[in-house]
Amino acid sequence: MNIKFRTTVARSSILIFATLAAVNVHAQIKVGVSISTTGPAASLGIPEKNTVALFPKEIAGQKVQYIVLDDASDATQAVKNARKLISEDKVDLLIGSSISPPSLAMLEVAAETETPMISIAGAARIVEPMDAKRRWVFKTPQHDGQMMAAITQHMSDNGVKTMGFISFSDAYGEGWYGETLKLAPVRKIKLVANERFARTDTSVTGQVLKLMSANPDAILIVGAGTPAALPQKALRDRGYKGKIYQTHGVANSDFLRVCGVDCEGTFLPVGPMLVAAQLPDANPVKKSALAYINKYSASYGKDSLSTFGAHAWDASLLMQEAAKGAVAKAKPGTKEFRAALRDGLENIENLPVSHGIVNMSPTNHQGLDQRSRVMVRIEKGTWKYVP
Image (cartoon, rainbow, N blue to C red):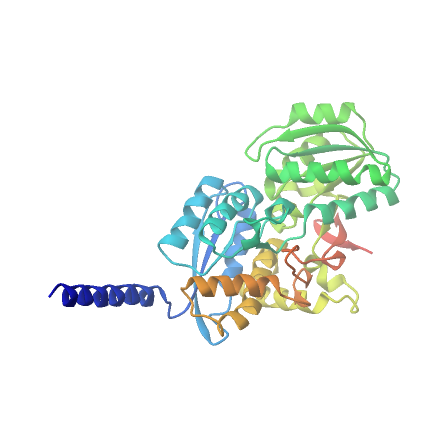
């Protein structure tokens, strides 16, 4: 009796485990998206959310379900979202967040649960240096280092010898500051002032007075979305006459609206998507950039078009490419499928996206080169390509 009873229990246990495993297998690929549709980064998150609605509903013969949550531009909420998406919704892939601090927080959850993640935020620290955690994380925007190289080159070519620096007092700002310390001396540009401000600040008068007292030839403002207009407007109000540079973190129409005439003449590096129509036909990114522009504009109009929506679109293109091989190796909803997606992302080669040509590797989880950036100047409230 004992032997028979134990055999029956063992068979029942096997059946239960097999049933539980079967429950976790999805009828479709599940993608969890955590982006900043409210809070200081809302001007980034809203076009990203619009873009997610344009994602394909079927990939590699599999239906796809997208679950979109707002992290309110907050790292703590982004972690809560990531945990919910993974533990409750059983997603196969995470996309997000819109900005660097929440993305850096989310990558901890992605690594812990071995869930591939594609960030649509800028900081190089999201994927560098490569380690066991970042092995699960990829990103679509250009690195701050790539963009800083373009800024310092432009400064050098235009006679800038001294520069001031003002940035967000968070991971995004610190990443850019580190790149400034590395690249400005290479171009023989001296950093003479260094200030910080919070994304939620309403005044930067003290910081601006310190910047102006140093009398730099140019000032770099490191911010994202509409909050980056605050120091620019303060500098113009105080009569600063030098060159002003911004980062690709402001490349949307909301920034232009809020900053208004105070942004005339500002230089910044952007992804080629933003000025795709102005690029020469020989540019290798022009075709893929226009494909996104046309699709987005048909649904929402050109006024809400931004580089941030395109970063989300590029995440979709990466996901589609990786899923082609993953669905042949494992079923959605399984650990094996998540691992196959991760491997597929890491092996992407020569994929045209809206911001460049992607070549991933075990040591490079961003995959963009110099083809992913151009310089622009703000003229009459629009972006003007600077050859």
